[in-house]
Image (cartoon, rainbow, N blue to C red; front, side):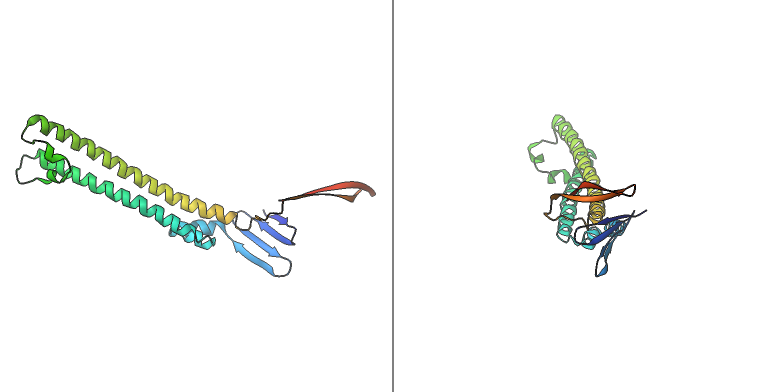
Length: 193
């Protein structure tokens, strides 16, 4: 099913389920723009759907978003692995494994004291859980940014030929209608937006 919209400047726009096509009076078909194609492009390579929609300024925004999220996910993952290794080295009773000393602030604890050792062990467990939760949450946020990239490309493709001009006018003019083979005077109301 197609919907035909005729605008003031003699352009017809045919809108279907997955294609928007603009037909001008003199040039024939101006452009076929598919929201489905934009979504598939963005799914294959983030930012490619925005390039298809000619919204090039959005491409760096997409990649900066992925970069920032990736940086913090990597930072949390490194800290998770460090605290996990520190916990293992603290609890294995091997004097040669001392990676727990790489963590800032550990030098203030006396690991020979059972109370300090227990406090440090529980702190490592809490830090592991904290960094793991943040890392996993950032992966979920990265998936959401990926999905938003696809949704943005599709919505932008749907609105590709949308008229955003400043012509917001209302016209009242007399007209004649033919009803039951009789001419009837009426007022025609038109609204351009």
